[in-house]
Image (cartoon, rainbow, N blue to C red; front, side, top):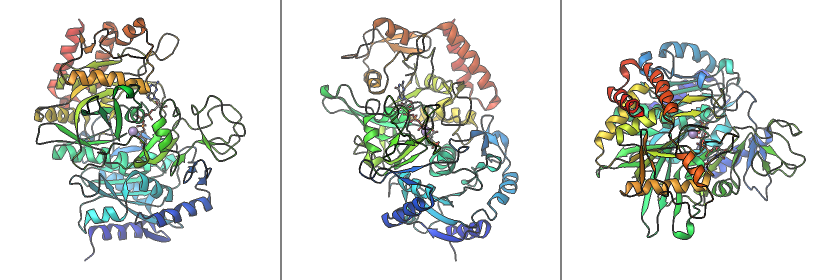
Length: 578
Ligand code: GTP
Ligand code: SPV
Ligand code: MN
């Protein structure tokens, strides 16, 4: 008897009609073959072999450069189960509409069956996905981003427990592009895009949208969070998880270089984008990074902002939509002050100095194990115990540098009312502030009102819950300069958070939470004036009343799916603001 996997592969091949079918084993030899073929047909260009060995450039279609949230759907039986913040399509309608797009879609192409693992091999909570795709670029990326090939089949062990994801490039037209999630069937269908979160189905589609639904049902959490390790003098080690919306600083914070190394403060990386969290026997929350690589924002990355990322992406890296110089060395805005002469833009044309040479959402795909500051614990299947959660958006005004919630439920409100200026990571109005609860707005696979309830219930199960903080690295002065230096200096904020977790750290109580008392942040060796610091921590009651009003309107759409306690928290905040 054929297994569920064999049946599904068979069925899919009959529908998509590929010329060839390849089961990927994840080996080096297979990868070399694929990369070679992609160089031959122009899908990839080899980069400078001395300076960037094993590195390749891919240029995606110019209308396929970011996630397309308006073409992303949750296909639950009831629209209310997708909730007001997701696009919904009835499962039967979705199948009827999109099956024809898969019909014959792989003719003239090779169909790859890509088994992959989210989570470390052999770990109890790791999960198997199988992506069927007609994109060799997707295969190569999945090999870096997940544990791909035989290792995943071994974990599957001939069983039926896997998340199927069907992907075809289709014709790449946004008119015929759909990213569909069937939460009841734990199934993903994606057609019409070859880009990032639309096509690498282990990442946002599985590890966040489908996994968040599993997590709700099974009592754990799947979050859009980096996980970092912070060692203090004397060797104590703490773990912090932080949720920032796309292109708002997760990779950078996860890899930060401590400006206080000499004093014995070291930061190491566990993960840069996704955390799966479970309640431990000790009443703490334990986090695992389910990914094996980084799909990171390239622009702005340089030896000063993120030297660890620079070293990580020197070798064995796929660059998507960056510029390249005459000697095959990649370039992007922020790599150096001025672009080198003879640059070719991300679109493959000579760069004349107008517009951007690299696409603002250009990305690197690099193995996590290459990161110089990767933690020895990064593949620990038990995970790491989280001492604090940090939620941060990109806000030119209003939101202070850091604030601590009064307790878990107040923290859930702070996270749920988070807003952020939109970035190039998704197609949309860049710069516009939108509410992005827990940085999960585009990634929660079910009704977000229920998701808030899940957060409240998880808190009630934790006897040693992480403290909850919000931050904002992006506050600006009147002329648009960032008030806070950011990057490595963000360590100062993390240190205050840890002091709070240990019951020290001086605070000022404000209506929105505790902010650091004057002098409480360790600013040794940093030149930030007292006036700037005061401005960074200022809580403007009138502005916050407006924020509460916005949040009320945002919450209203959830109707009776909004937990009463969250409304009560909001009302209490309003009362404190006077
Ligand atoms: P996704 O991969 O889309 O989830 O993004 P991310 O949250 O990992 O963001 P990332 O760390 O890649 O940063 C995105 C952009 O913000 C980059 O251009 C960074 O240079 C910039 N950035 C990151 N941290 C800081 C900071 O502390 N201050 C300032 N001013 N910019 C930052
Ligand atoms: C994000 O947009 O949050 C990303 C990049 O991490 S993508 O994989 O394209 O979703
Ligand atoms: Mn992300």
